[in-house]
Image (cartoon, rainbow, N blue to C red; front, side, top):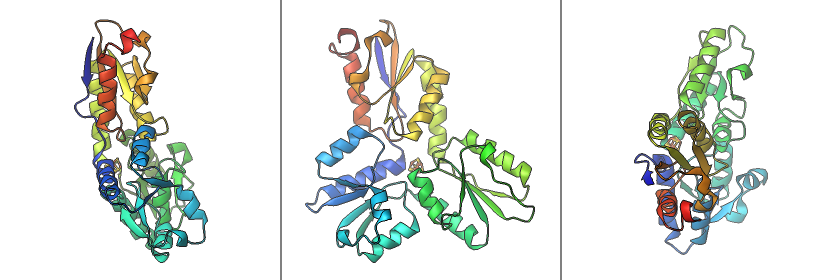
Amino acid sequence: MQVIIDPHAGPCPGVNRALGLVEDHLKTPETLHALGAVIHNDQEMQRLQGKGLMVLEQTFIENCDTADEFAGQRVFIRSHGISPQLESKLVNSRVRLVDATCGKVKRVHKLVANYYRQGYQIIIAGKKGHPEVSGIAGYCNNEAVIVANKNELPAIKPDDKVLLVSQTTLAREKFIEISDALLTLHKDAVVSDTTCSYINKRHEQMQKFAASVSVVLLVGGKSSSNTAVLFEICKNANPRSYHIEAPDEINMEWFKPDDRVGITGSASTPVWQLEQVAQFTSSPQGAFNK
Ligand code: SF4
């Protein structure tokens, strides 16, 4: 059996930067609090917490009147970003922010704030409750309509001014489906494709990789929406695809002796996890001798 790691796998640039910042700040003895999981990957989060990272529920801070209990302490903002309301609360409480908001997400913040000021109704194509979407919605005073598909588009009056943006990790095809439907309803709508080019490229690469091997092991957090999308792509390209978080989920019955096993990951899967799965699958203790 041959085991191959997808050469394009590994965290996206935004998550990579966030992980690097966390590692750097953990080198000093001061406590680092993260607003929610830095990465949707339990194993990586356990590793970082083992190095001293403290994770705060973002909703806990959102629901408190102030963040005064963290005054003077370091609080980490993950690549998803946060709403301006939450940022003001932290700044007013003199919290020291370590901001790893991805530049592409910041671009959406600016765009939404700009059009909202001009009286536009903002529509966000994405998942309600996703932290990135909630952060973006804050830039239009939480007045955005969030749609997961074209059927959820709101009724629009002819003279309404409308801006459509996207959660960065939404599949581009999905966004196009929604934007086409919006433009049919309202030809003057402003459509800004804010899907992440890295993620879109990954979708194509993932499809090719999955089709080139006999079995796919997609390593990624079960709570990650990006991983769920990638798994669907793998399954469509190769029905022998399995989504796992760790080597102990591998079942020997998935493999045949002549298989080429391809190991890949989502935008939130560190390379060490892919190597761990590859090592397990190739080792005498792995799939065939479990
Ligand atoms: S998926 Fe794209 S937009 Fe989102 S954090 Fe990664 S690089 Fe940034």
